[in-house]
Image (cartoon, rainbow over all chains, first blue to last red; front, side):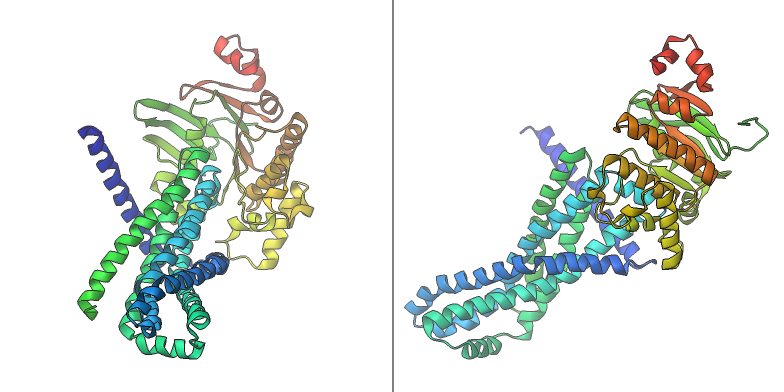
Length: 259
Length: 246
């Protein structure tokens, strides 16, 4: 790669970051102005939340199951299997649950938004909305970003709960630990400082998922090829952004709660 | 059709220019549409027709020139005022552009969102518009359940739902079989008679232009090349003009 190519790539990268920031700015401007699209917001919440439950549930269950199965031999080696509920719960609630479930949602929700809005863009449906005097940004984008911001934290809480159930199931079957004992130990181990930062960052994850998917779809060009690109790049950009948000969240949490 | 200059046009485009880099798409295009008139605009692909209508409805900003709808210069209007003015414009997109995730009824109700109409009033207008295009039974269908011709008719119903003064048709018969195309042309005539609209029709279809036009403008390289009635232009010996009618 030549210096000129690197320069061009960097330029287009920063241009895109600037456009994304402008897009986010427009969201914050429009979200507080009338008319509010409550009906469409509820529909999007249903689409994103309810229709992702099964996927998030399965992911959470397997996550808890595998994590416990993999950790058991090591903990047993040190005679520390009684630490299993606290170790699994803190890991899942603080870090693994939010990140894995947000990544799954990036694949499902962000790409879905990118493809749907991209397809609407190339088939002139967004233009038709604008011509009819409706603000398509408010109707399509604001509602989707809001819905993702509200639904992702709930999906993460749901996924975490299922993951802990999966973990408890392994402990129950392999370690003769009752569900009651397992969850008593979980609730003993979890503190406010574990739940609050994880919940706060999950709102940011949701915002990123909605924002990037909407940005890619709304600005889609190049016909049907562009729709594929919008969907694909929505997942890639969202995943990158999730890790950046996670890094910042851990950094900030460390300052306030001294991890 | 009286298009004498003492009557103010309902739509006026003057010296419209638009370029994309070195590609000068519109080079001073001018147009006047009078009340009750059906004005057909013909031009080859890439001649700037779509860019012109995108500028007209505010989907694109022109580089130069003025665009007036019902005497109002749209560049001087605030977004809210322009949105109100847009309700006086019906627009039929080439690909119909029906909202995939909505039923026919929801598609037709969509332009009425800012109108503060009751559910009964909205439904009455939806029925009226669907009756005009002969598709009342399709009210609960999804766009994917409609044929190409039905989609075009539903899109026409959506364009007339707010009883606009002007309807812009972008290639209304493109992609349709000849019989359906004739039905659409007949529908356009009926709508003009029943709703007393003025129409700006962008088309390649000579049959459509012959049947529907009161006046025509031929667009070449982003500028008015010729103007007149269908009969006048089709009888013109100029090679470039004759190319449109072959």
